[in-house]
Image (cartoon, rainbow over all chains, first blue to last red; front, side):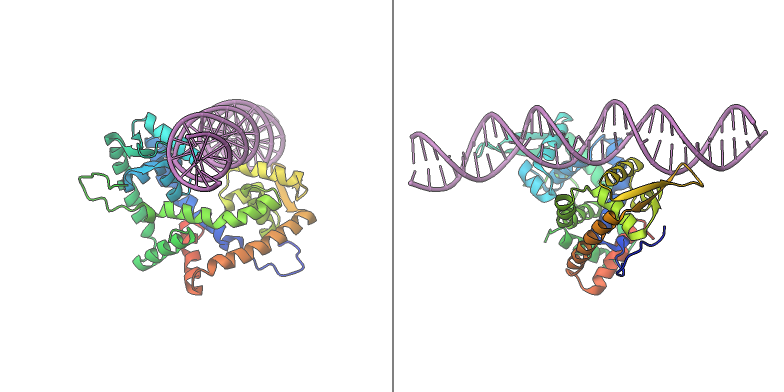
Length: 150
Length: 150
DNA sequence: GGATAATAGTTGATTTTGTAACTAACAACC
DNA sequence: GGTTGTTAGTTACAAAATCAACTATTATCC
């Protein structure tokens, strides 16, 4: 690995480029948790996201989940289908606007959610434990801002 | 959206779950930059990553890129192939160990790299501009730690 | 109230990724 | 020096994500 012969000075450092850095951190930090929902429950990332939205916020429509999770509607459609097949959620058409359906977790889905949630909570604590309390809080704040979640 | 009827208190907040938050921030923060390399150069994420590694560090092997970028070797193999087709890089077999090949950018590849790098630099500055200088530095430090890049 | 547009969600075709098996070259060990 | 194991990289097949077109329902507007 030699430096490229560049006329101007190349002070760019890929390892500090925020989009790259964020991606690396995101991937690394979800690896172990991914193993749990994948190996233990046979779920995809899209599926635990939908499960967690319903578990955490209660009844929602596919549209609402898409907005909060920034997920495309086809992903959600398929994830909802899978979770329905596994009897983790129920859909009931909204009688006021029959285009949309209200999604809720079944007792079985709620049980799985609670188990995963507890694991998630511990996992999050382990990650946050790499920093001081103040740093971790600042990190979350900055990430929320970057994600446009303010 | 009503709260789920949960026996125990559910103090878990998905919006603060670090793996989720990191993913959201990573996706949002790479959106605009993605548009550039996608629309203007018809590149995929895997391809700009390989391009940037070669541009930023100089000659590397596929293996080395995989280690630094945490990308699977099949992804790299395909990205290298695409970049080679577009005459952005050249591969030369290492005569000391003929299993591996040394990858370098062509002048054309270097030109594209420099253009994208300048855009990346501006883009990074814009993102970092959402925070104080100290905060941004702390953010990068924390992300590097989370990514296991220490 | 009938035509046109917009919205929620689904489905099918294409593209991209992930998994496993493979080739070619080298290393280690006896 | 030949067998066994390891490594760099590719390829084939399966799984998943993306994109575009579609249905059904509601809103708009003349």
